Length: 79
Figure 1 (cartoon, rainbow, N blue to C red):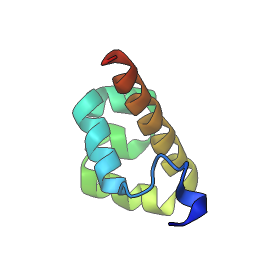
Figure 2: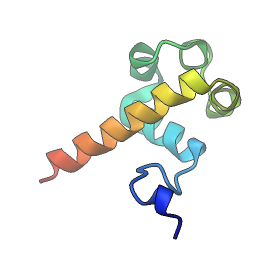
Figure 3: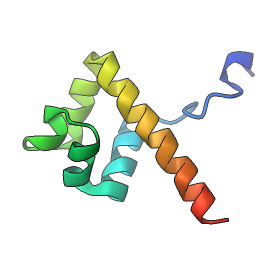
Figure 4: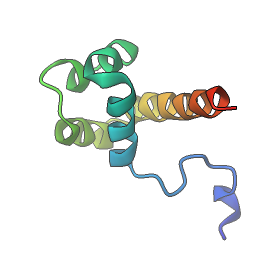
């Protein structure tokens, strides 16, 4: 196993799964409020979001950070 991936919470999770999970949890409207980018606010779709996020590192970073925080909140609320 690659030692650099041991503490990576995103290891093995695709960007598509991240986007789908966030849309399922928040919906497009709230997601667009949390991360104000056009692909979430103007005619949103998973396909257009993936295309934009793959080309835009700063936006992808925000999405990944929100996903990690959301997963931590879900885990903490089930304890």
